[in-house]
Length: 348
Image 1 (cartoon, rainbow, N blue to C red):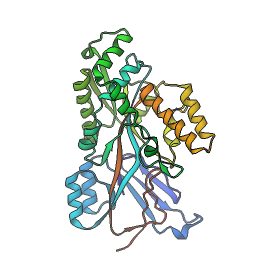
Image 2: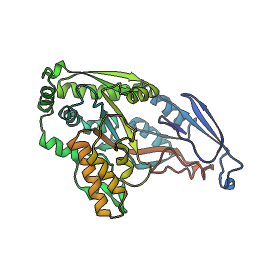
Image 3: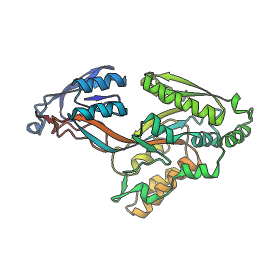
Image 4: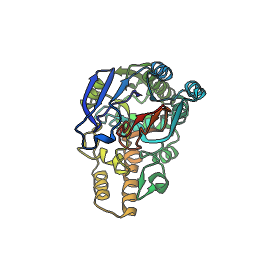
């Protein structure tokens, strides 16, 4: 099983071995209450950062399952006839966030200029190789409220409205620079993008954004590449200007995307706090009225992006997992993380 994302524990393990940046091994627990249903004796989760190495491992049989994004590999695996393909939304949104304690990003107009300037269309097309779609709001498609798709019910996208009201992001940036009393020339604005990764794929993403912001806004943008533990430490200590991550749903309700931004949540340190936002999320959690919850979340999303410019949504990602046909009943939940190995087995 190959993945380049964070790994989480599973309930069927007796013991686990974690070799940093290499692998996690999970063993069956014979004392588990439903041990007879667990067929696999061991699951090895290989941590392979470099994409080419991951793909070669899947192709030569060292891996049984992995996400595949490059068209050349998709074609290659399809030609073998040895894989099943799992597709669909993965209930996540990529995003950038700003340090509002920073001199520049304390200003809402500057933050909004960066939100508008982001090239979401080509991020989805080029970086995600078509396995994503542009995100013009925070909560992704597939998340439901009372059995209906939240995005469809809301019917509005705050990024699109923000862009419509401010068609020239560079002009908005200049207004923001004037408001904080610094040189209004964007080329004099030094910005550092903090990238959580040093591998080739991370550099591909960071360089794309660097070129976009330099071209559209005219700022002097540099990239600082660090590994994930350092990224966490720096953001926790508010030692950054812009960072980028992704958030995936833990359960099927919009709240899983909105309660993380309430004051004191401590999930993404931005220095931002908004009482009205907090009250909306609290209200949504205290009522069973679907229409009221929908309105609460809609207003909260508008505050988060259109009014305060706290985050900049990037794309909604798609799953595209290639799995050997002899792997049976390995479930890939839409919500939560990783896979469910309890009923998995191999045959053939």
